[in-house]
Image (cartoon, rainbow, N blue to C red; front, top):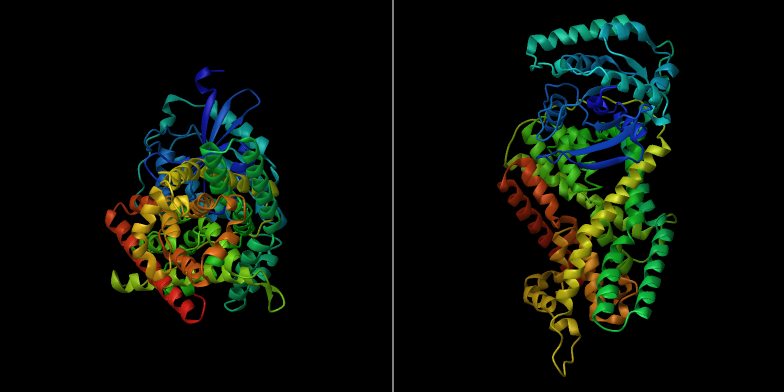
Amino acid sequence: MDVAVRSARVALVGNPNSGKTALFNALTGAHQKVANYAGVTVERKEGLIRTGDGRTMSVLDLPGTYSLRARSPDEEVTRDAVLGRLAGEAPPDVIVAVADATNLRLVLRLILELKAVGRPMVLALNMYDIAQRQGLRIDLERLQAELGVPIVTTVATRKRGVEDLVSAVNAAAGHLSATSEGGWMAPDAEALRGKAREAERIMKACVRPPERPDTLTGRIDSVLLHPVGGLLILMTLLFVMFQAVFSWATPFMDGIEAGLGALGVGVAAVTPDGIWESLIVDGLISGVGSVLVFLPQILILFLFIILLEDFGYMARAAFLMDRIMGGAGLHGRAFIPLLSSFACAIPGVMAARVIDSKRDRLTTIMVAPLMTCSARIPVYTLIIAAFIPNQTVWGFANLQGLVMFGLYAAGILSALAVSFVIRRIFWRGAVEPFMMELPAYKTPDLRSVLVNLWLRARIFLERAGRIILPLMVLVWALSTFPYPPEGATQPAIDYSFAGMMGKALEPIFAPIGFNWQMVIALIPGMAAREVAVAALGTVYAVADPETATAVLATTLAGQWSLATGLAFLAWYVFAPQCVATLGVVKRETNSWKWMWVMVAYMFGLAYLAAFLTYRAAVALGGG
């Protein structure tokens, strides 16, 4: 075999909700990495597979698209990747068009567009088991003849047909030639109408209506999409999710906390007293460990989001929220970016690319950071554990979980309120109608869910090592040096650089009840919200070595008033405590103006909310 083609690049292209990512996971397993495309902030997933004859193939999971016309930024990346227009990216050697076998009408036009690119192509007819179960009759031989590409039926969630697909792709890669580059040109309106007519003709010739229509989907949708009952079910699901974040994670968090405590004691026992013991125990273990303990809660949140997405419920949740969001001036498609922001505002801001209208996209970007991201969970959990009793109310609900639910609700309501104001002040006009294809219900694949969870855990742990660790060393150094003078009566940290900085800035934050230790935590917390918890762990550990391995929440409960704790929560509902998010907003809007508008309005809201919360709590006796 020609050595030049032993390594091949394969691109997975398909409509949203076609099972493309599940197929990617089935092909590559754990051999995958997540990064960004060169020059843009769209996330890319790439993995490796090896064929039976020794060829290595690089598989790229491209963003979902309906056409190479590319009406949204996400679709532009897919188009440019397919055509080899991305900086530093070669065009794919083979295109795998991934189609939902139960819904071929839309994808056929995309396949015809992909054929015009001139690259070797294979059609993966995914979710074929659902099509068979519905009695959908697809004439595979005729469809293959009409399209002129090999067809492989797959069930990605159960890895059926994956080996056949690899063989077909391998065979296609073996037919590469110098003339395969193609001379694709953007089709005009008449050409698009011609492709639509051709797709409709192929659909009628090769696909017949199901003998057994999927009445189960209709019956489920009649309940889940009910204008009243459906919203109640959605709210109940969100309520259960936030309760689970506390209830299910507690044993795992206790285990991590006990392990870190034992580690701190063990290190202190074998390390001589002095600066190195302080760095390791007070700086690293207390700082980084105070963030790692929240990993179980973050994974539980991601577990719910992944399961709901794989089940097919997310698109229906967007449909349910369309009327509410439309009333606030948001496009129905904004629900997915905003829901993604519950995990992290960065992919949420990037996901706004699915919105065609520039104004609607910008509105979504401006409010996405108000959604409660996973980085806020360590802060919320710490303060809730310190000041909110762990007790049951109404006979079934955990009070701490209720407060967490309230914080999430505050973020959602504030996002709706801000979007309403933006639409009324910056631009007026009707919101474009919401159109979204509802995918078939599917049983989530356990392996795919675990792979996605592992990826999220790895990203969190890498973030802890890459961002939090060096920042904690810096915070420790600022909190330790210079040493107190002879005869000093205050804690050593009072005489440090951190103490000086905190006390200099304290008057600005005194009206909202913040002390200088909290001010210190806010500064490195701009790098990432969860760093504030690590900074507090380091500051209070250095201030009082006896608390180095103690529960930080207990320490704060003794140091802060209830009003201060509640004000800190209110601050974090609104404050833009994440430089990375601000950087992505600048890149997505291609404007410094909108980034600074976001900084100004979010810090303004944070200060106002903290001030009102603190004063109200003091007036009610919580000071």
